[in-house]
Each structure stands twice: as C-alpha cells, then as structure tokens.
Length: 468
Image (cartoon, rainbow, N blue to C red):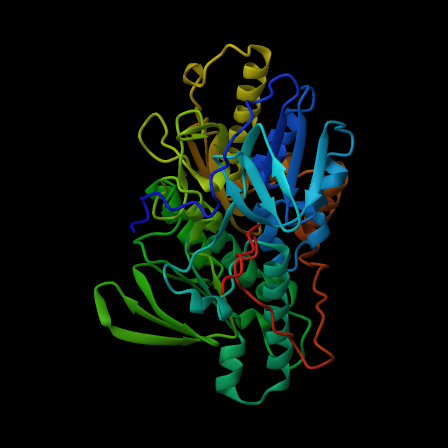
C-alpha cells in the first residue's frame, strides 16, 4: 500500500451514531501543542464542553528546545502545565493519557481504560522524528522533539567535555570534542551555532587540560544549501555566519549509515566514496513525520503520514473531524504546502475554533458553506548564535544583529506565561553580557556517567495496541 492510499481503520464501525449535538456539543482536542492549545483557548466563551487530551502534562515551546539542549535555558522555562494554562477556562477539561485509536465513523476516541465520544474532533498530535526508513538510527542519533530529548542531548554534550578532560588519548579526545548534527533546517542550524558557542565562549575557562574553544561542530545537509525555506541570499548569509564562528557546514552530503558515535557520509557527486566521522554526540534534525496514528484512520495521507485535509481542514468524509498543525497536509493559494511551523498551527487552531463557533451559532449552515483556511505567512527566521540570525518579515530580508533582535522579540511574544517570558528575558540578558549560561547541571546513573535513554519518537501520543 502506498503512503497516499487510505489505511484501514483498526476499529469496527459502530452500528448507530447519534446526531451531532449543536446545543451543547462535546469537542475533543487531541494534543496540547500550538494548534491544540490555541484551539482550546479560542473556545473559551462557547457553550461547548471541551476536552483536551495529551500524553504530556505540559505545553512545550518547541522553538526554544535547542536552548535547553545547549544549556542556555532550563526545561521549566519553556514549558508550562496545561492545567495551569487552562485553569480559568471552566468549560475545558484536561486529561492526561495515551490515545489508543480513533474511530471516525462512530465518533469515538479509545483511550487506555475508557472511550470518549465527541461531536467535534480536532487531531493536533504533532509530528515525530523521521529517519527516512532507518529507525535503527534513532538509538545513536536522537531527534529534538521533547524535553527528554533535549536533556539527553545536553547530558551527552556536557559529559563528553568531562570525559575529554580525563583522557590522554588524542584520537579519543578528537572524538569527544566532535558533535555531528544531521539536517540543515532551522533546528539543525540553531543547534549547530549554539553548540559551537557553548565551547567557544561559555566554557572556555572552565577546564584545565582541554581547550573547549576547539570543539568541532559539523552540520550535514543533503541539499545544496541550508535553510531551504529561505531565499538563496539569506541561506548563504546563514552559512557564512555559521562558518564565521567555526561550524563546518557540509552541503550536498548524504548520510549512509549511523552507528554508535559514528556517521558514514558521502558527497552527492561521489556516492561511492565514503567518509566516516567519529563524534561523541550525534543529533538528528533532518526529518519530521506525522504522528503514526494517521496511518490507522483509513483516510488519505501523504508520504510523511500527514492527513490530506479539505480546504476547511476537515478530514474528507468526516466534516466534524479536523486535522491541525504538523499532522495535516494542505496547500496555500500559491500551490505550496502550508509549512509545519508553529505560526501555521496557531492559525489552524484558531480557524477551526471559529468554524465550529459559526456552526453552533447557525445550526443550518452546511459544511460545504465553510470559509476555506488561508495561511498568513508573517515571515520566517533562524538564529545562528550570539547576535547572529537571518530573517524575512513581510518580504523584507535582513541578517546579523538586527535579525537576532527580531528573533528574540518574536520568541518572547509567543512564549506562554508571564513568568516564563520574564525568566527567559533575564537569562538572555545575562548570557548576552556575560557569555555564561546557568543550565549546565546534568545527572548521572549512580555515578557511572550517562544513563541509557530511549530515543524513540517521544512526542507521539500513541501507544501501539498489543497483538498476539
């Protein structure tokens, strides 16, 4: 079966389904990310009962996750409990749990120990790290999708410096002082810059034997340039800024294999000439796929597992069910896919809330009368490091310090919670003037170093059903 074909639903069709209750509907939202949370908050003043379900108890500001991985911020500064965020919304209930299955035909969500019926459903379960058909690489090259991922990467990087301080073996020292990041998108670029500056500035005076400024950071990208979503000149500027702080940027480079502390690569023009890179830390930032539950719904999906939705974000054949954020596939007016970024998810969530509110206000409205979703691209940006960034806002392109200030402002604006905003601002101001970062504490496994951590996709809300 191809990825664009409909997958069979694992749940039997219900014999009878009650009509949608538009007087006091039950709206179920799966996922407390940008799309799900903004959808829930937008339903505050409706007469609907809203249930938000997530396998984590917190909303995570993923764009700053790389700063947790590189010891700039602590995890609690970019996450906030969902119950705290929604505590004043009396019509919203938060449930912690794993979704086992969704039966679109009977309008039910199957959890571990109970089943939830809905009148309207929004699937906003986000994406997971995709290894392009090589799931065995996950144990050696974790992605960066959750707090656990970030803490694991941070422990691995910081512990490598500690081990480097203790070794006299030059080959081992070279490996311990090397970080390989696969993927030249925003996550990979921002992570590469932050890793280099961690050694170059933050820890340069902290060790007696090693020189942290000599940390080697290699960024691997299969395409001919990094930040492919940006114009060529901004992409080139980003690469120059990365290389200016010492990051090795390798474009047109394919990953052939990943083992423990080893990445095998080859140049596109010479695929048979393999090169082995040894590194203490390997991070995968190259691919994202939709939550695997999409493959069990019996609806059409694309190669990444995203649901091919209608113009109103509803799932074809099920007008009361919507897909929001990374889990959906929809085209812009210009024919390009809506990007899987947080502003798009936020707009989708708010749009679905307005669509439902409109139908509740006028029960005679038909689904085919809905206004189509339209994504407003406010711009895009990526930070390279201290006072370095690239940005394009309203068609205006700029880079360097001004772009970095714009990046700071935008991220503070969208960070949830006043306390989080204030704490992050203080951290950033402190780091700007002192080049010191205060989140460099890591724990070990009974004093023996880094404990093994499962690096399977950690943002999935799905626990596969056991089969005999």
